[in-house]
Length: 94
Image (cartoon, rainbow, N blue to C red; front, top):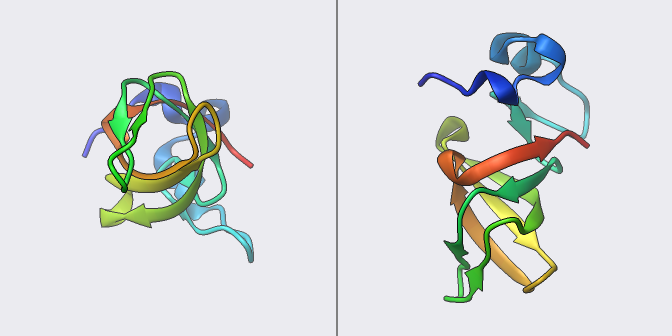
């Protein structure tokens, strides 16, 4: 699946980022567990709540080889949501 080049950190490719590992983080594509992500559009939380565009949360799980992520949000609404990669505007590696 083609990746948005804006998601590559410091000009590195997804493969280079994917090859970088630590004991606490498993990298899949450009986004890893514990990275902070910002929403590109509203998403529905696992319990039906709406998490608005622009909300920032922490990736706590990676699904389908990086095509979706379990993200924990605390503001403006406390929620856990499964977020597809195309709903993520930006990410900040931990």
